[in-house]
Image 1 (cartoon, one colour):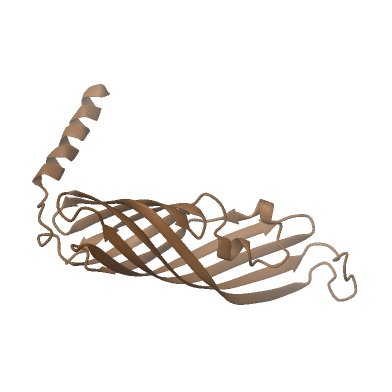
Image 2: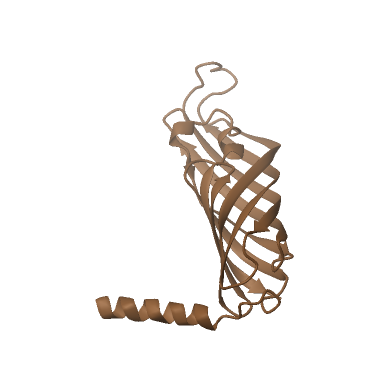
Length: 197
């Protein structure tokens, strides 16, 4: 087991050593597939889900993609899209929320050369949030108009914000692995993999 671990580690180092270190070798334009793993419910869902049981909210990782310009320079600009899903259920009501988020971000690359390049970034955008609410029992505040089984939908367009730090890793020419964490509408980790041109 230990021999296998050291073999994998040595192979990873060999890949990094063999990776072109110049910025131009990696290209200035990148396309990534991203996954965002939240530590809690993103604020734009947490704050707008109707009368949901927020402490029971279950959030799925956000999935989407990002296009980055100036990837090999000091400053990189990214345009992204992510889709989110969340749900909450109790004896009184069930909520199913979904959000489509469009973002813009500016990344400052602290290192412009080498296979491992740390960065800091921040930005924001808007999320189109919709929530499907179902009364599981007669609403205590209005039993006439909202009996058990009543369903209704609410929606809103809300601002989003993000600030994170991380590293871009180039394991091979024209391949990028982006790892980051921080505040992405709430505490979260961000993992992206893509190609550069």
